[in-house]
Length: 168
Image: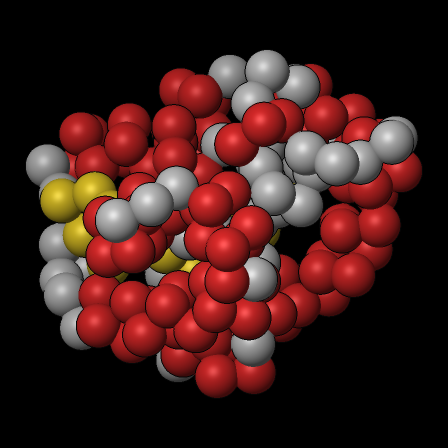
């Protein structure tokens, strides 16, 4: 089995994915970390030097490779659903979980890591920017997932427990 976590930045994909992998004794892949290894630079640097299109190209190639693995939890980047190719891949997988959070929850969760988030770092109003991103992507997250988990007012263990109920 493989579980793929999708959702906007700040939804907890990495933290929840790591905990889920520990509970299931599965491997864990954070796509953003893997992309940084492949490119030998940070995501912010990739965006600054080559632009979002190049980042999305690397991201798509990586997704194609890692979905072939089993016994794995995959934490995707928040924009994985922007490309048709990626949405098609995700729709063909059984356990794609949309971690759904409100703008306030997402804002609270990203507030300490703005500099590591290229789509937020130059924003004048974070709440408006997160709301824009969520508006642009929400339907695509729903379209690509077969499980939707509300993360609002829940701790990591509560979200992980809820996921385990759905996937077992």
